[in-house]
Length: 294
Image (cartoon, rainbow, N blue to C red; front, side):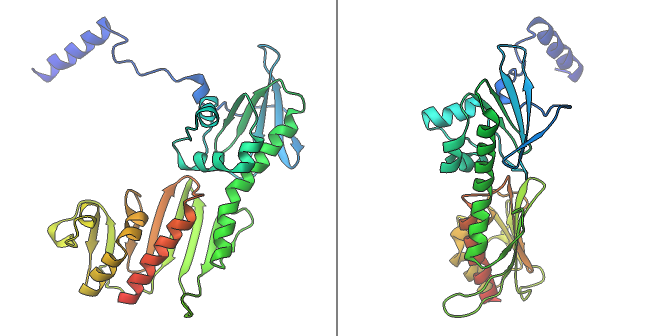
């Protein structure tokens, strides 16, 4: 069939059956209401909150601004209902970890609650709603910060005031000193981890995700299905195979993540919370193996 005939046939079927391939309509409860353009914001326990009266049923809609964004957060009434009543956590990592925090579950308002990186919206008729919403915002803030603070303390690293970055040099392993420059930051709604290597690896050394050519394979049935390796020496190959599982955890299905002679880079969408500690531990295990083989 000619391209023109196919196009005509497609248009004809769409005209005769307009709803056959129509995309599903977005449930209004799946989207987070936008911030109001006007109105007055009031501080409640340090949180900015604005009240707007709705016309149906006398309910109020309260808007709150997180003091710092929470990338990856997405809550709507159906998501919260599935988590609370049916034990079905949100699919996205950040929302799942936040809803699992006891402080968040203890303070989450009932009824229609929405949240994303920039705002929390609650539709309610409850008295004293501003205080309830402020407590929930503070619980979200604590749940957002605590895993990063714990990681910084564990490795004796520095953390900035708002918890948007961790930085410093690690030290101490099996009674000997190690020094890995580590940078973890929240940027462009992603968690970005960078661990510096000693720069003694081959200039063309690189490990990334993808389908390798025969020259880029390690002759390992697991790694060769997911990773591309360049600049490998026999010692580096042995080191990589020794840390197969940590390496896969660090790189597999992580988009921009890769390793070069100078650094390990891991990029994860959203704000990494419960998984951050294990991921950094595995990245450090890979860094130690590579550095020891150089």
